[in-house]
Image (cartoon, rainbow, N blue to C red; front, top):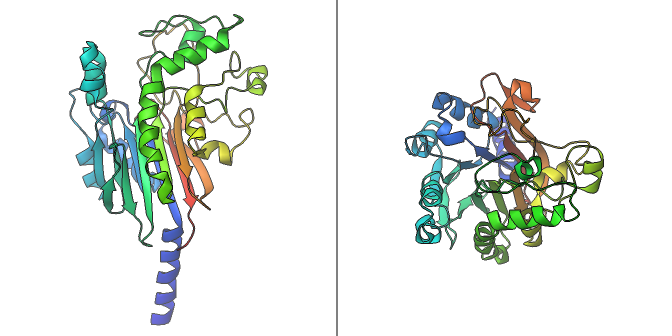
Length: 329
């Protein structure tokens, strides 16, 4: 009996040592739309080992990370978003400074957290096998939002872009760069400082920008999007040496669009007369020798056709769960 138990224990250890589940989850203003237990349930049901949470505070600006982590038995680190006051407050944009400072993100880990990256946007985690991995998490600014601009939806800053204009794609790229270039460059600088170690790296986040891997000519011709757009942020991430887990597993954006936005009951649509455009703006990126994607699933409401569904899903974003196979030491 003891030999059988030992064999099963060793088999279990091998499985947990070589499989890692990474979740990106915007919990929508600290999960305030429904009881926080709903948000905790979604994370628990995912079986995730590493969780990148965006919008970790509620409407009263109370950080929900400690309660979520305690319920799950996870460790966590809360990230300030890009030194908000220095970055934006000095320019007089107090609304953006407050939102960036407060509605930030946090990273949860099932396994011990042993270090933080130089720029503070990532953590080092030691797996049961002894292998070290890095987990980064980000939440990019939510406007200008190019899909809204292309629909002429009034949403904070961002002038309308005529999708039929000869320079429509160039306008869309410029708008995306204005909204996200500074933020993503800081995160990628942080990641690039870690990449030479050769340790696996994962990046989760609500990017508030679609991917150039989705808005292709073929997808536009299929009617999924109004035109082809070579979105700059996803290009920058790939150029830095990371891969898009969803598109590695589902390479055809027409056959499997993989929309993550909007989801569930979304009460804040900026223009009720215009259907909110569906898009894939929540991502899990990765890098590392012999790191392979085993499975990618979306978590959402029953009506969203998500791979893992909940009757009362508590967010306006589908969560994205990527399962990886790591090389054995």
